[in-house]
Image (cartoon, rainbow, N blue to C red; front, side, top):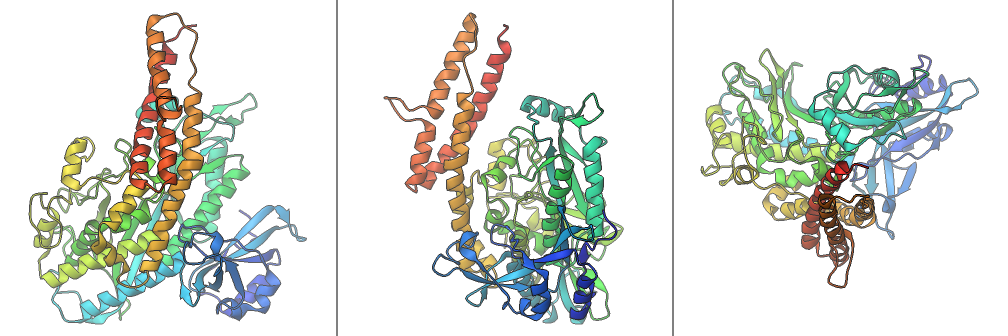
Length: 631
C-alpha cells in the first residue's frame, strides 16, 4: 500500500468542489470509469479522461455524459441490437474507489489510477440494472413496513417498540468471500486435495510465503478503501505448498477467506464485494498467483461460498436504531414477531429467489451433499435461545449474540462468489416482507409463530405449506437419507433448468418478488432467459467438450492380469456410452447436444445429471484400475 495514493472518496464527505479539488491534488488519477452492473453481476470499465469528467461533472449525475451499448451484456430482451443505447447515471450515495495500474506510471512516479464511480443504467427512461433494482427494492420494502408499523396495528410481543417514532427502515448486508489461489502451473490431483480435506489439514493453518504476503497486502489495500477487514484466514481446501532450493514457495493450491465489516447501506455492501474481488485478483496476481472465484473450481473438493448476512432495523426520530429481528428478551425468545415473519417469508418463497442465488452449472456443482453446502430449504435457530445455532447444513441460519441484540441477523449459505448480490439481496428483502405482513396481520404471538415455523411436514399451517418442514436442528446430511430429506424439505433443483422450471411453476411466489415493481416481469423474464441461454451454451461449448477430453484421456494400460483386463473392458464400455456414437446408437453427450439444440430442456437437464454422475463414477473407476497396475 502506498500512503501517497488516494484509494477512495468516501460518500458524503465532499461536495462537488471538494471532489474536484481532491482530484487536482492527485494528478496520477487519469481516468474515470462509470461502473454499471448488468443482470449477471458483470461490471463495466469504460475509461473516460479525467479532464472530461471534471469539465462535465454535473452531466454525469443526470445521465447526459455517458452512453454505452447494452446489447453486448446481460440485459437480454431489454437492450436489443436495434435498441441498444443505455445511459449511465453516476451514484453520489456510495464510496468511489480508485483502481491503480502499477505497470503504468505517471510523470510523478505514481501508478496511473482510474476513479471507479458506481452508476445506474437507464434504458428508454427506465432503470434496468442490478444496482437500481436493489435500491428500489429496499425503498419499496421500507415504505410498506413504515405504513404497516405506523398503522397502529398491534405487533404481538413488540408492544414496547415506539413504531410511531420510526423515521426510516434500514437494511444490512454482509458477505464473506471464499476463493482458491494457486501458482499458474500447479495442477494438483483431486485425490491429494480430497485426502488433505478429509484429514482436516488446512483450516486454521498458517499462511506461508507469497500467499501470506498477498493476503497481508490485500487486507491493507481493503482497509485503505475503508472496508475494515475483520479476518483473513485459510479455508478447508488445499494442500501444503512446497519450497524450492532458493526458498521460494511453489506448487501453491489453497483455499482462503476474507471478511470485512457489514454496511448499513445495501448498495455499498454489494459494491464493496465487487471491489474486494478486484483487489484480491490484482494483489495475488502481482505475487504470481492465480485466483479463482468459481463456486466449484475442482470437482470433488470443497467449493467456495459467499455466505450472505441480512438484517433489518428501524431508525427512530431520536437517532436510535432498533433491530427489528431481535426479541425484547434475548434469553426468552429466538426472534421478534417481525423476525419470525422475516425468515418465514424467505423460506416460503425461496423457489422465486433461488434462480438469482444459484444461476450457473458451477453453482450447482457446489450444492451437493457432503461439502457443507446447503441443498434444502430449511433454517436452524438453535436448541434454545441461550444456545446459538451453528448448524452448517441448513440453507439459512439465525446468527445471534444473547448480549448484543443489534447483531441478530440471518446468514444465507447458498450464494457463491459469482452470485449477483444486488439481485439476491433484493429477493431476500422482498420475500421477507411477505412473511412480515403475515406475521403482523395474523396477530400471532412469537411463540405461535415459532410453532408454525417448527411444524412437521404433515402439519397444516396458516402461512407455510403443508407437506414440508422448515426448521431443523439436526445434521441435514448425516441424519437424513436423500429420500428423507426430499420428503421433509422438498426435492431441490439439480440444474439451472430445474431451478428455472421450479420458479415458473410457483407463480404466486414469483408475484411476491415482483410486487414492488423493482424486480418487474420484464427484468425477471430477461434474467431467466439469460441464465438458460448461458446454461445451454456452456454445456455445448465447454462442459461437453471437457467431458469428452477427460474420458478420451482414460487409456488402456499395459497389463496381462485378468482382473485388469476385466476392469478395462468395463471402463471401455462406459467410455463409449458417454462420448462415442456407434452404429447401434448415439452416446449420451451427442443426445445432450441434440436435446439442447432442439430446445428440449427437460431431456437435456436429465441427461446433464446422468452424464455428470457417470463421468464422476468413471473417473473413480479408472483411478482404481490404474492404481492396481504394477509395471
